[in-house]
Amino acid sequence: MTEPRLRRDKSGFFRDLLATLKVWGRHPVLPVLSVTFWSLPHVVELPARSQPACVPGEACGITFADAVGFMLGGLAFLWLAGWVGTERVWYLRAFAGTSITARQAWRFTYAFMGRYVRLGILASLVFVPFAVVGLVSPSLGHIAFIVGGAVSNIALTFVTPALAFSTRRATEAIRIGLTTIGRTWPRSAPYVLIPALVMALIRTPEWKTSRIGYVATLAGLGLANLWFKGAVARMYLRHHDTHPEFGAANLSDHQDVQPSPDYPAGMDGSSPA
Image 1 (cartoon, one colour):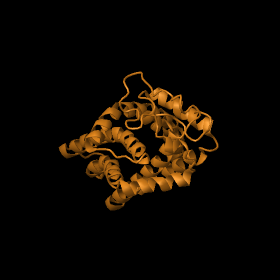
Image 2 (image 1 turned 90 degrees about the horizontal axis):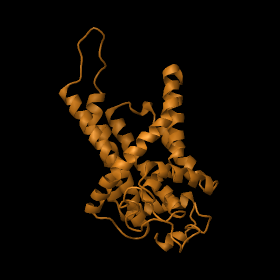
Image 3 (image 1 turned 45 degrees about the horizontal axis):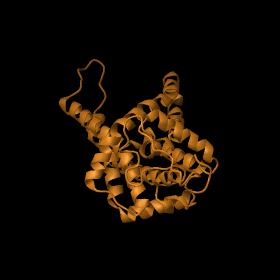
Image 4 (image 1 turned 120 degrees about the horizontal axis):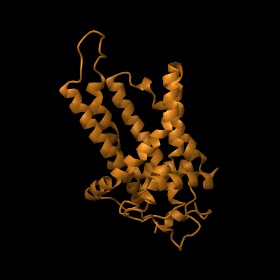
């Protein structure tokens, strides 16, 4: 059952952002680790990505260093997939006034890895029509990239916390997330629109201008992403029950968190989502 103090909380988006900053103050290792894990996959691939393009008529190929870089980047992305669930359980505990151990963080990340990879595969289908637009009309490729990112972020706003707090099934998380948007609108509007638009606008190909600028932008992007995650997590927890310590990390296959009869109306007294 979710901690009762949060159930009586009727904070809005900006108050939830402030509450997230307070969590960072009590748990500074969370933003440090999150920014590190967010940036690492891109940083280890940077030497390979910065190689000049092949010139027609000249021999070129993938070097051993390139292969190692891309392999390490892939492993780092796999770890990051699980870490995004651990971040939310960390927030869950921090909002309730408790903490998380290094051993638990490792175990949670491993537990979340597979389900977030599956969600990523399903979510990538959203980009298919925008990728087609970019191929058909390269001049519209940049706009399609921004719009595709915004649409994806909007749709996944409450899907990603659902996978950490309510279910281990990606398809069920999608259903819960999209239903939550509909049942909490327009209260959920700033949680859905502001992070999606901000992340879509700043995460564009143009910010990959130099190595220093690239890494600095990655760090800023990671912090912004983590900040929004905290606010969205608080909003989600006001409308859904979850285990107060583990979220959905310990759920077995085909098992979801069951609604609590003690709080049938959601955490803030609204209709259950």
